[in-house]
Image (cartoon, rainbow, N blue to C red; front, side, top):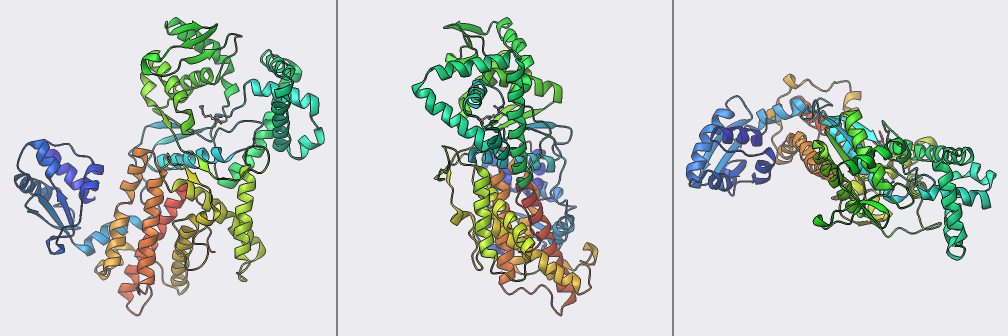
Length: 575
Ligand code: ARG
């Protein structure tokens, strides 16, 4: 039980509601370390309860003392002016924290038990390359998925493939004109993309092309055999390529429900909007006017009867929430689509569905400054391959690795570099793509705030433990450890940080930011490396000290490993 939890329950007995987050944010170090290890200022609480801070501090101290009576880690609680000062029993605290952290599951909790959350993420467009923008959605979405799983939620991963729309008609007409079977078989996405680019270029001077494309899409909508066969083939070829990327990133989905999946439901969705009196006809199109919210109208059916992206999202939301029994549905999609989601969610709300509030757009910024290779989009696979080649070149200097190992580790480092860099800042921020920055820490002696830095740290933790285990002694059981041996400031700092791990996971989920976990992991690695390079020997003549430090190292390794698992950063056993 952390101090923050104790304060929350003590405050409740005084009639005040605080959250663990608020308290954690307010906790500080006492001005004078003689006074204690941790201080809680009561100003906000005093204001809420309309009493003088020193009086509240005294009352709270009494209540907290009761709350901590059974917690040996807290040695004393004193009110000093407007502050509550805590002193820890370092050994008891280390015992409590490390006993928990020695389990590989430390941090796993049940706050989400009984709740089901759907996450719509990645969702690339068929017949277009998997671009760098979809990488962000994939990395962030997968991390949020694993985070909620760790918190006990039931999670459902949904890929809303862009597999429907007029662009497929264009693609078919382009394929009929310029398509090449051999090229399609050899490199499907590249060929389809080239056709798509050529179609757009030629349509500028030959407007007949657009009509032809529209006619093909109409054939597809009407169930024409040739159009359907093309569509199925293009879709299957694209999916196969996407699967290759998902394999590399270690991402899986429960449902590949693309836009086309909802086709059968669209008429009913539009009819429902009409029946609810929400629809207006504007220039022949059916829209829901949202100008009272300063939003553009939500377009659900065009004059020619065609449905749209928003129509499919409207039908999809209802279908998913109802058939999957979702308590919450997250859409991990770039900030450029914020208006779209505001519109769709508002239509759901106006339809009177109580679950409208459980739909959440989780926006993110852009990746800038990436050089374009072919066409106008960058192929993620080429990027990953380039990163892998860079890392490989560096690993050539390590003669102890076999060729196969080098290859595998290079892949793990490259993926970790890209994924961690993406997740290590708040998602709404744009960032520049830079191998230099992403791979900082690859060279010995560098401490980059990067994936590879964490991978090195984790490998170091494992090798320290392996060397110890190889010498024959097992990691001691918690009740055989003398925790009073962990007496240095660096050790206490690690214990304090480990204690925060479960709360860090909750915080990350509260704000839907994988960056909270990423920052936590960086700080843990920093604390460990400071400890390790700061003259602390793990294995020494002192058997009791060795046991306590081995337990500390094993705990750090467990938590760092778990953090990287949540983030989707691969964990090479050695580098
Ligand atoms: N395919 C879309 C795109 O690439 C993203 C789909 C996001 N999900 C959704 N339900 N709209 O822009």
